Image 1 (tube, rainbow, N blue to C red):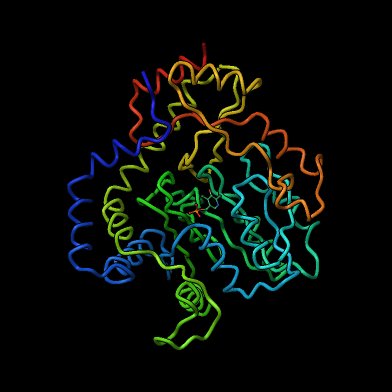
Image 2 (image 1 turned 45 degrees about the vertical axis):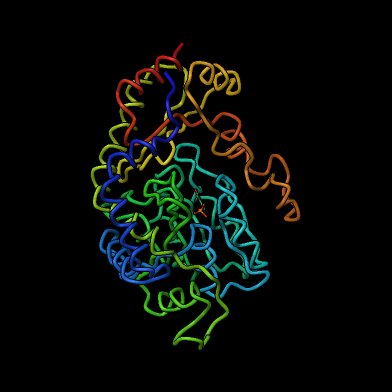
Amino acid sequence: MQIPFIDLKSQYEAYKEEINKEVLDVLNSTQFIMGPQVSKLEENLAKYTGAKYAYACSSGTDALLIALMAIDIQPDDEIITTPFTFIATAETIALLKAKPVFVDIDETTYNIDPKLIEAKITSKTKAIMPVSLYGQVADMDAINAIAKKHNLVVIEDACQSFGAEYKGKKSCNLSTIGCTSFFPSKPLGCYGDGGAVFCNDDEIAAKMKSILNHGQGKRYEHKYIGINGRLDAIQAAILNVKMNHFDAEVKKRVEVGERYTKLLAGADVITPKIMEDRNSMYAQYSIRVKNRESVMQKLNDVGVPTAVHYPIPLHLQEALSYLGYKKGDFPISEQVGTEIMSLPMSPFLTTEQQDFVVNALKA
Ligand SMILES: *Cc1c(COP(=O)(O)O)cnc(C)c1O
């Protein structure tokens, strides 16, 4: 049996008729950029998350960049974030010549440890950027409380957690700004690159909407320096179809994730721990094992693909070496980085496939 790591094929088969029709409608309309499909998506996204404003944009990375530009991040400003994440989190900070200041993660959730944040706040700190890794929201109440005390902005990197809940509220609508990605493998994915920003603040929202379209207000009148950060209509049309099925997919994701945890109880692995006041979208179902490389090789040999999210924490990445961090600075991120591996995960993973993965892993 060959198991797909993320089963995008079954998903497309399931929604094929609707998606093909909507995509053809866009082609026939020749309205390829912005337009009614994008507006409809933005309404859908705002309604789903409860955020007052949602704006679709070109990717999760651009969503983070737009958020940072909208709060006017300047060179040498400091943004506190986690080193245990995808490069985009710190990359966007670095692109603006601001400084990513890392704080180690909590060993249970793999998200930024709020207890370690305050010690890193300086007069240059402008924002905290927690990541809701693998689909489980970071400890936003604790983070928001610290931000409030020090007058900082909180930007949730929710690129893996669209759909997740924290104390009854949706990810993306838990802080000053929420940013998500619609990369195909994310919990809500399109068929190319896409993303969105979320906000309840009138002023910041208006600025983000403008920045993602070259800082434009009225046509050819530019109030801000912006970017070409628009989402195209074909991606919006696909996302609008997928939104109709998203609640069912969320339910399936949680079921598949919880079933893995149940089946792996007692095995010599560390399974994800989800806090009681939240859930996880299991953007990745990631476990910790000793001798990861040989486990991954053996699984691969029997048709079970795996991946590592992420093998090198950001403070040890060459591109960020100028920050001056060294090995040992963030021991939990480094330790988890040597043990973590992700199993095949999607709402279309059958129980038969899942049993196969679990049995192969146990063997
Ligand atoms: C995927 C991801 C991003 C970037 O999203 P893109 O749409 O690929 O640009 C940023 N942060 C995290 C945590 C991600 O997982």
